[in-house]
Image (cartoon, rainbow, N blue to C red; front, side):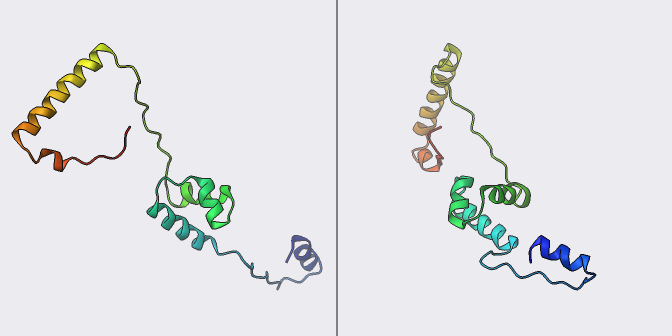
Length: 118
């Protein structure tokens, strides 16, 4: 029922009006769960990709992600392309420690977990 129809019913004194159910639109709780599942499967999805997949607005996806799922965007710290002399020295020392650990324990490399290149 449109706003104008509601207004007409209330103006005419009819208070027992019922809204028509929305067709083709899942309830918000369904969308929250769908977004939650998508992010659980792939956490690097952008809002636009989720909105296109679920056929809902980007604003709705943003609201679900930030307000309902309490997720925040965290930007990774950029890695400097040119290192200072102090940073170079630190890298040399760290590399030496790493080589020593590999020499002491041949299975040391098997215990290292890498995430990404940055």
